Length: 388
Image 1 (cartoon, rainbow, N blue to C red):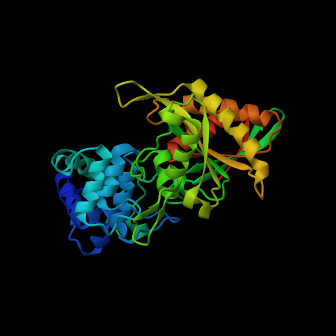
Image 2 (image 1 turned 60 degrees about the vertical axis):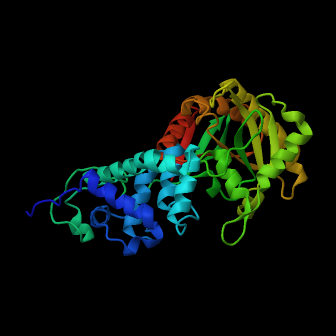
Image 3 (image 1 turned 90 degrees about the vertical axis):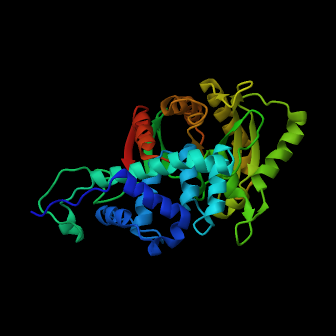
């Protein structure tokens, strides 16, 4: 059997990732990146998958960046390489400036310090993908040099040759002598479609984060804004509506009680069937720090208030509001574990459904491991089946 192909080392891959940073993924097909090309050739495309406009190399870069697990590191990597939506044709200087803003540092500081860390982490994950590719699958894909049936785990997951993990998991959950549907969505919150109300966590001052951040509230703000054909901001709808709400109900910057719910439209998300956004005040700023504190009891109180507001608003619309989607509140910068967040919010959801309410309940997470956790936790509440 011929020798197995050599896995490129970290230095080789990092040098090519830096090339991509300078050129952007829009020019990927013209770049000389043999290490990335070789890795991309060996990483199979799932049967239900596909490639981005940049081809297999872009797919591998996106896969590596997705494994940064969100937060500032992933956001900065997406901006740096042009993987963030709408940035693939941005000049390198604009992408670097946006990445620097993620960390709140100057462009020069980001170039000398943070960028090296960000691109280094991307290169490390690309190398790990190459190391985990089974070298004996080539006969099936026309790319390998070996034969046989190896047992190396596929980098996309144990069943990736047959299917990608389901992005929507439909459950039937037993609640107080009846079975109710619960849908778990596994993707970014701005990809939701045809759900009447989306719940967004907020701090107790209802101040939204900048739209380039990766949090749920920042993502909704960004997706709800109206932009011109080249991406310029025309109307920051959700931010403007929330400011008007706080001006009416919390004058002079007064802090809201945890669990308070502010209501805005979905802005441009209305085009996707998102009719309302309920902003729940949960994160209490810690004095003289950049940290927040979230109490599980405030999540339960806030979600209960969400349902009360939904009951008030539902009949005013035609058709009436009925479906609602909740993220794992407080499981980001709030510091709660996903299971603690779910336990706090489900206490309110279960109480609402137990009294006979007929809401269509959805949950949204970005990672499949968290979706798996939700399925297990809902099974603990007597889930009776899982589809997809």
